[in-house]
Length: 106
Length: 459
Image (cartoon, rainbow over all chains, first blue to last red; front, side, top):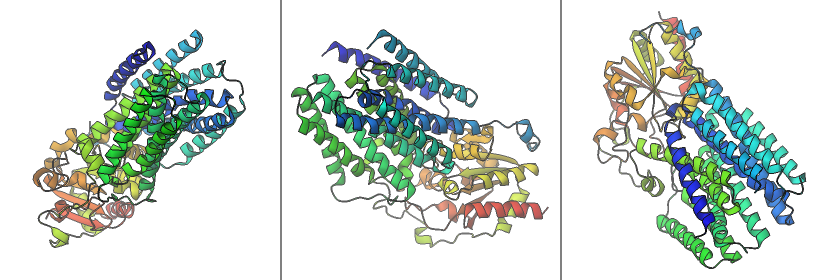
């Protein structure tokens, strides 16, 4: 096995553990924003598509790269925007609503 | 890779982890997203300075087009359509990784190391699988393709055979590299398998499927990282993959079913209508709005159990209006949220947040199940399986063992339902036939607004 593969596997396995630990702390309340957030992050495959679209290897590679850049950008831009749009909606019971909640609520 | 680029990627990776870390509470979540965006910005700018990139024409065109489409989708899509949006984004993610794989293979003409061959094959296979699988999931959610499971004889045999076959082809390519035909064939099988594998999965199982596709998209992105030697792709793919895996495990657990059962079980086929209330032979109490409003008027505490039906009839704002008018009368209102209510993890939470329901009124299964015996009235808004007592006592039921809300223990139950037809799963729900259950049939949103009006009139 090449050292490159071993090195990559180290990173993959450790990142999976970190991911698992960090994500198990996300409450069910935020599972949808979590999904769209990780989706935006995995749009980092944009980095690979940028090279494919800009390296001018040949026409087919460039066109495939262009489509890949478009698809990945949709995820990055759209993913972060919609995650933020969702998160803006989550709120605690504010003072405005406090007036309505008298009956034994904490 | 230059040291500057590597360091930029390292910083971006750390920012991505901090972004996910922020999601552990609603207060820190938005700050987390800003860190994620910053990480993405750093990674993209650093890549653009890469010496391999010669022409920026196609990059600018792609980024411009992608940004326009991404912005348009994000701003316009209603919250009830979030599962569809997530399915679409997995579809784009899968497509992007698959095309990078194909593009890389074309320009190297397959003359690459064994590691790269394997990684490219894996990436392309999972990329196309995620792409078509997500289109299918999208189609099922949208109702373009029937939400019911589509099954035929030997289906599992074909799907498992194709999967193992393509794994074999991948391994063979690693042993004997530079076989373009085999490479494209593997990608083609991934393409077909995405369609075939999602066909037999029913609408109610979508939370697991969407989570699993999330995980596949992550794996494909990680494989891209191995193929082009990019650590940030390996890391981000691993984060995405573990998130999807964790969510699918949680969802399966919330249905008390194994992965294999969800993927190959074809829920809803050949189910014997279980035990007692076969075909509506037992009478149910159909109640009018006034009857139900009378119960609500007398209640001291109310629990709302929302389900997919709330999303379908876009009733979240009406739910909130009813809760507000009850709270004005001094009634305590709580919401019981089941992990698999709706079509994706957290679906109900987002809808209620959109309707301005404060999140401290939302309760998980474990935090609310003991409250039902002390509750005067439960309002079930378009939920079915998650309130089915058969899950607790009927071993013959397909949902037996699934953790459910003990709604039947409360004093009275008001069920809002479109009609008396059992849902996709075809499972009868005896809750609907209990003496303390009132069935109010019709559109949930209209019924809820009628409740609000009735509460205003009667004092």
